[in-house]
Amino acid sequence: MTRGKRGAGVAMFAVLVLATCGLGYGVATATGNLGHASGTATTDAGGRTTTRDTARPSPQSAPVPARQQVLPAAAPLQPRPAVLQPGDHGRTVRALQARLRQVAWYAGKVTDDYGPATTTAVKGFQAKRGLPVTGYVDTTTLQRLHAMTRKPTKDELANKVPDGTWTDAPLDPRCRTGRVLCIDKTSRTIRWTVDGEVQRTMAVRFGAAYSPTREGVFHIGWKSRDHVSTLFHSSMPYAMFFSGGQAVHYSSDFAARGYAGASHGCVNVRDHAGIQWLFDQVQVGDKVVIYWS
Image (cartoon, rainbow, N blue to C red; front, side):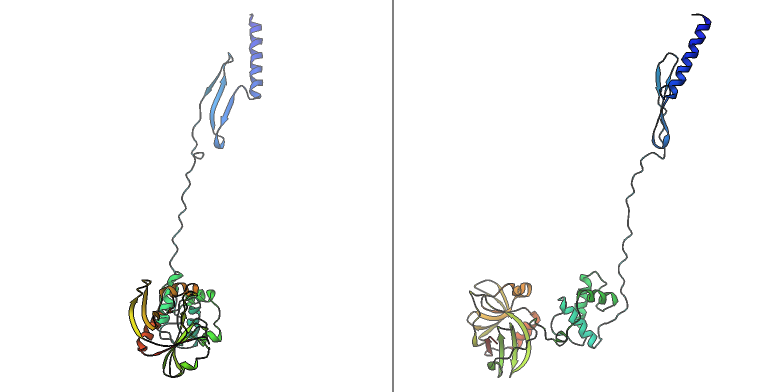
C-alpha cells in the first residue's frame, strides 16, 4: 500500500472511531450510585475492546445501617396537692364514696367521713389505674374517677341502693318483736332486727330449684365459726344453723360470682365483715324468719 493510501485509510479509521464513540460504542463508562465511574471500556487500533475496572466505593453510596430508635422513658406521674384527704368531712366525701362504690372499690354505706375505708378504696383505685398511690384524692385521681362514673343520685347518697345494703321492703310482722334474723326472698336481704329496729342489712343468696331454702319461722340451733360441710366438703365460715343442714353463713362463691350461682339450701352472705359481725351478735335460740315480702 502506498503512503497516500495508507494515510487515507488511517483517516477513515479515525472518522469511524469518532462516529462510533458518538453512538456510545467506542468508549463506554458505567456509572454507579451518585454518578461515580465503576468501569471503562476502550477499543485499540486493531478493534479489540478491553475493560478496566475503575470502580471505587463512594462513601456516600455505602448502605447506612438503620439506627434503632430509642424513646425516652415516660416520666412517672407525680402526685398533686390533695383535694380530699383522710380526716375530711362533708358531702363531698359522701359523693366520693358513692362514686367509688359505683366502680366496686368502696363497699357498704356512704358517710361524710374520710376514714380508713375510704383511704383503702382510694389506694386500690389509684393502684389499678397506675396513679401515685397516696390514699388521698388529687385532681388527677378525681378526674379519672369522674370519667369512669356518673353523678350519684339522691338515693345513692342516702344509701338507698339495690346492692343488698338497703331495702324498703316491709318487715314481716314476725320480725317486729325480739331478736330476729329477718330474711326476705323478694329483696334478697337479711336484716338483723331487735324489737323491730333494723341493726344491719346485707345481701343474701338462696338455694337452687332442686335444693330450695326453706321458708317459715325457725330458731338458731347451733353455731360453727370455721365450719366445713361434711356432705359437700366446702367451707362454711360463720355458720348459724336454723333447720337441719341449712344455715346462714359466709360464701366466697357468692362474693366472687354473685347471683350466677346458688347454694344447696343455705342462706349465703357475701359481706365477710358483715357476717363476722352478725355471728357475734346472734345467740343460739334467736328467731329466724324466712318469707316473701
